[in-house]
Length: 210
Image 1: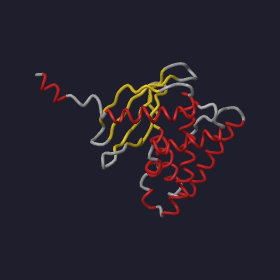
Image 2: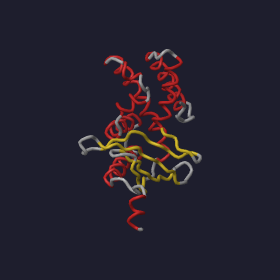
Image 3: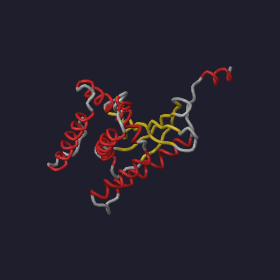
Image 4: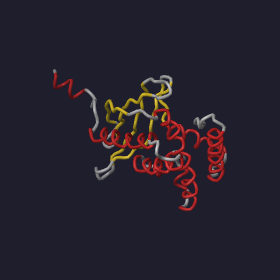
């Protein structure tokens, strides 16, 4: 009976290497936010460098515009990607800022496929003092040597906000309403960035607005 139950039960934990990958890299990213010796500009630069190592930003950029990504030529994609990367990194920093001064603790993981797993973690929010669950959608490369994050989910009010999924819903919807015009989407991202910058300058913070 024990053998039957073991065969029927889904895998409780994914590859421990994916958990170690998240633990190590998330600690580095949080460390950048916690480094008081850095100026805001230096912090943003370092944060971007580490997030590009941690997450597959190009794949995320393609994912959030859906099938439109297939029709862009190299020049069009570069214009879009340069703007999207700036925006996405700003969004990540906004959300991770609530964990400034805190450390992450990986609590487990589950398999989502042969090369994908969701790594679960807990970070205490420096704003509320409460533990917040953060989930990492991790993909193993085809050669089995490297991991990259596909998406980050943060538990808010009992539900999980997946950042890339949220952006995909907004960007695909915008493109559908604007005849798939990538230049109009780039303009929309400019508006979002300007709004976030204004919130920083007037002391309202840079709360994410999709």
